[in-house]
Image (cartoon, rainbow, N blue to C red; front, side, top):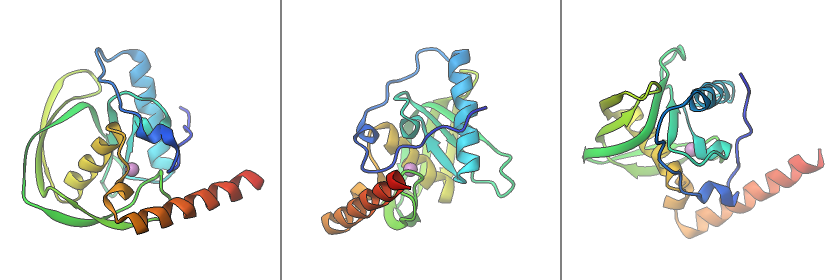
Length: 169
Ligand code: NI
């Protein structure tokens, strides 16, 4: 397995729109394994293929304490949603930034699992937030885009400074 490089905001490639997966291949399965490994080692609770510069609709999530409940969602679609919640979010592409974002409280989704089988799932709380956050990545949207222009530009300059520091060390 390989730890993949995670794109950092404001990398323009984070705004690419991911294409649906037509058929789950061995190549996709390898990518899923690498994405899971990358997420666990970060450590994080969710990762979208967009974040590792693969612009296809694949998400991995694990919100369990023991990191033993990997959820793989391919071509996820929200088929129902209700309520609202306001939760603090972070993102592996925006390290060190945590901000509150408004999301649906409860969602019903449909997706393919890593074998290509149809999967339906209802989620609320943290899992619901996490799925909505990762699905946004597939649409080229990073969570900081929900914040005020001022906050957004502060985060952007902070991230640019951070990446310059990384380049020189
Ligand atoms: Ni994220």
